[in-house]
Figure (cartoon, rainbow, N blue to C red):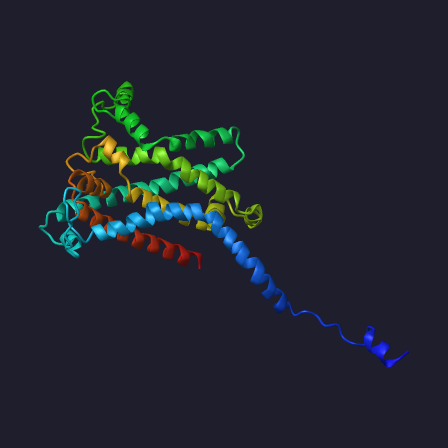
Length: 325
């Protein structure tokens, strides 16, 4: 065998040259990742387009309006800087008193409704999580009101809660209770009505979300707690609540935001009354912007409300994170 044939043939003693993993990753990354990223953006494009048109554009336009005296009846709009914001914090200005009164009404409704809309759905979800007969039917029954629009809810309950001819007062009279309770025309009954109707309408949604969270808690944790001698109450506080923490964060945040943006119930049931006691911030903003054509001030109010809700959301996230740690 010649030297040339040895050089040309395979050499068993020579180590195999392997392609470094980093090289393989770089080639895959150079071809596959951009292709997958492009596909992802292609599927996201319709949503991004809608988000840009219906969220980002109105938000930017609203911010521009808030620093002008914008009105649809004016040919030219005048730039006034931060005057709309300054008026909201200046006692005696046109918008100061009514705006903060409406913010106070929004705060009252939020403080009254949020705890109830968390506790009742949580207890309901715990009950439905047990293997009971007709569990699926009960879930559908509790969730059914949520599919109705706020206009339908408002019209139905306005007739039920009517002081003179409402069904609720008539039913109370059959069991010997007063029949002239002013459910929608006097406080605190107006707040009781608004909170009660809202809880009845939305508790099914929160209950379904919490029930899904309960399904994600491992049964081994409950079994271990039973072996340690834990009862039902201790299991609830030591296993159920910690396991639901991420879901509770979502439900709490969305419930606070929904309550702070309440409009339809108050508009349809109490019309903001008695007086302006139940007129929420959204009601006042819509009246200023659409009813009074004072859109510059209304936009400024919207951003003040947005700032408060953003701060509350951040505080809620931080509190939940500290509890988790």
